[in-house]
Image (cartoon, rainbow, N blue to C red; front, side, top):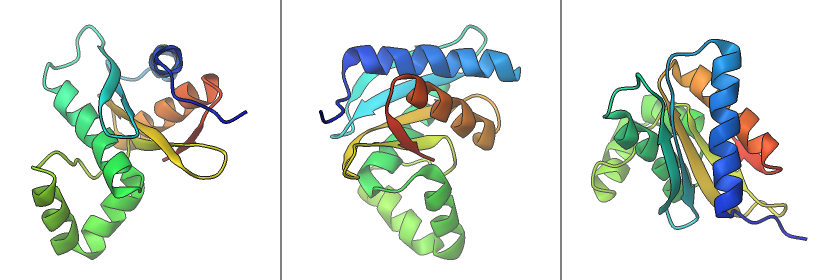
Length: 143
């Protein structure tokens, strides 16, 4: 059976990402799950997280989905070819945040099911928490 990104899976990803953040002792996190078209399925912002974290979480996930590369690859690309990421971000209306914490959700055959964006702590910690949430939902993440 092909994995699907459902609202229940999105809620599990968020719940378990936040639980992993607590286990790791991270700062308050904000987590969003987008579908394969870049549309939000679910979002939560923990108490104490800055209100602007929604836009950052969405930008991390949006870049992963729209560019087909996780945040870590986007950051490497931005460092190697700044002009490309600047142009891509312009094409997407400035919505891309090219750093770790933007995770692609992939199906069994590599297809993009959606993306997860986590923000609040260091980008690498954000990505680690996201991967734990994704695994708990029985899906594959590429950070």
